[in-house]
Amino acid sequence: MSLTSIDTSLRSVVDTFGRPLGSLRLSVTDRCNLRCKYCMPEPEYVWLPREDILSFEEMATLAGYFADLGVEKVRLTGGEPLLRRDLARLVRLLRQDRRITEVALTTNGVLLADYAQELYEAGLDRVTVSLDTLRPERFRQLTGRDEFSRVLEGIESVGKTGFGHLKLDTVAIRGFNDDELAPLVEFAKHYQAEVRFIEYMDVGGANEWSLEKVLSQDMILDLLGQRYGQIIPVPERGTAPAQRFRLPDGTIFGIIPSTTVPFCASCDRSRVTADGLWYLCLYATSGVDLRKPLRLGTGSDAMRDMIRSVWGGRRDRGAEDRKALEQIGLRSGGLIDIDRLRQDPHLEMHARGG
Image (cartoon, rainbow, N blue to C red; front, top):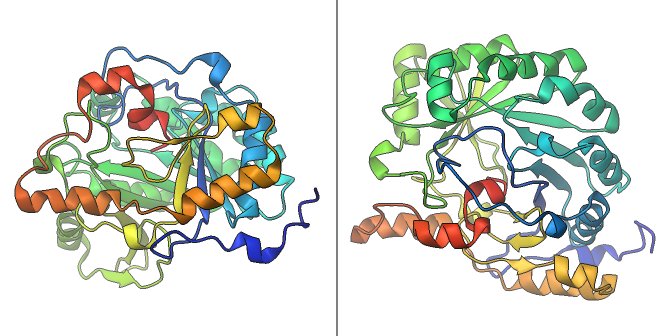
């Protein structure tokens, strides 16, 4: 079936709250070369069986089914996606589908300098690099690895290669990096990038999250306002997770306030793990197995019907549900018990693309 043969009316699928299926986060591996305390703090993990990991062809096929139903943006995630060999080949496969208007990558940057050029040539549109601190010793404390210089090399390579719209994602943690907000803004300016501060989220369960560690959107704006003066909200947001703001000199930065100001009402994204489990929400504790029917040879119409039916029944508002627990004093720790995390490797954030 050709890429243009699907009736456009079939591509308009919405969930029970009217949210469209517009964005797909595709995890290509659960492995990572860092051990960030907010994502992979445990010393050992149970990895997904290699035979269960989807091939690039299988991933592209699934992405095509999602594109049939309205998905236009695909973001490659992990774990650390650059650990997956020959990732540029997947980018080229996705780029063959003209309905997918954007293929982006989120990376920790450690291997980015090695692969930026080939990814750019393959058709990758945008890169987001996770950068939580500008202090090498603090980076080592957070990640358990001494790779800060390689991350900087990766960020340098983005501009040299020709990518535009570089974004830097910073998980803002109260008492850890709250003294680096302005330096990170200035760092982003230097690279013509946009920094996005992400509120510390209580996803997974091994990350020792607590509400006291959350640096809220209001706190971030107050701290930056003390440095820069009046900060003006940028009104356009749409389905993007970040609220954007403008400094007096015109610099734009973003805040993703998932913990204190959830954006569930406009969320159009879902996640497929490296072994083909489809999660409708980052907070979801169960997913839909797409690998099994795909490998059993289920027809394209049946695959689309399944995805359409599942999304059509979606009621997930995970961040809002977690927020509601504050009212009754039950939002005190991680989402999932640590013993359950060890039994099911899909439940920690590194396995589902963050």
